[in-house]
Image (tube, rainbow, N blue to C red; front, top):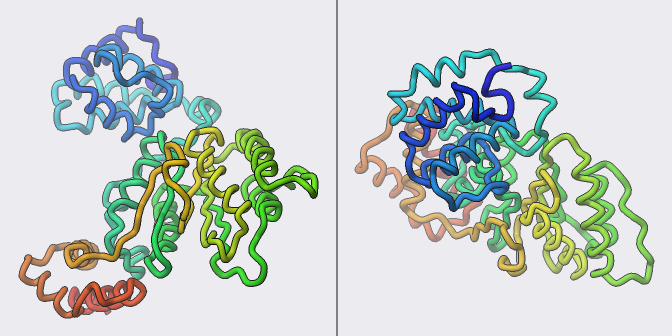
Amino acid sequence: MGLLDRTLDVSHPDALALLDFLRKTFQSKEEVRALALEAGVDLTVIVVDQPVAMLWQDVTITAGKQHRLRLLVERVRAHPNSADGQTLLTRLLNEPPDSAALVTGFVGPASPAIPDEVFEAALLWDDLPFIDRTHLRSNLHQMLTGQARRALLVMGEEGAGKTYTRQFIHYLGDHGGPQCVKAIDMSMRAGAPIDVRELASLMATTVVGMESPTFDPTAQPETVVSRFVPWLADEVKEQNEAVWLVLDGFTPTTATGGALQLVDAVARAAANRDLGPLRVVVLGYSGNPASAGLALTEPISHPTREDVKVFFRRAALALQGAEPDEEALDELVDTLGPIDAKPIAELGPTAMTHARAVFGVT
């Protein structure tokens, strides 16, 4: 088994050489943190605010325990400042990995690295326009690579494009991201709003494929919530895959107050890491984000003229491999008319049609 495929033995000569190189080459906590997060190391289990020499030792040991050490060293080798360590880093990486250790060791939410350009996509699957959403791209990057954040609250008015979040998560999944995305969508619900018991049952079958606990018919919604969330936590931790639960369309029209309380409680529990590897994304969140602890937030606003220019620039790169100049981009945006006056449901398809026509793809 290679040195990089187990918990790091800091007394090993190669480990000492690696640590010495890391300490001398990357001397700021920000650099250590960035490299670790790129490799998918879960930093919540260590103290980041400590001297860099000690931090590197903790990070490498933790990376070994989480089977992320090989990926961490790959990230280090690719860094422009690592020229002096190429011989050592390459030799360590050329030691054959132990596949059994990689499969049977740490079972956590760590995801394989996704190329940065995937997060910058303008056209999903080459035909679905994806304008702006800078915060969403950044938030999902954190959830996929940093391992520290496990809940996302997307806030915006009806028609703002919140459901595009689901499409982008699926798109990331096609490029090495979430492989198990499960949605509970109330946006098309007709009839009576879903109540807390029905939602608890639906969450249980959707996330863990089990019936939810039986609740006293007279129990108050807060009692159901207080019982269900710990039960879900226990069941999720028995799963061998990282599930992404997307909750869409939960409003006072489609869900009772108790059901909305359960949505909030599950998002808060995931954000605070009480639900193991479960990720929770709430589309159309209408509660108080401050109550959701460590959840990431994204308030959606209408794309600006500059956002549309960025879209065309990215689309040009994807479709023809070259960026237009600024003047050409401005002229292209002008063809759309007033940006603020176009609903996102119209702006996206119109911009895509223009991009494909101008950049030679019909």
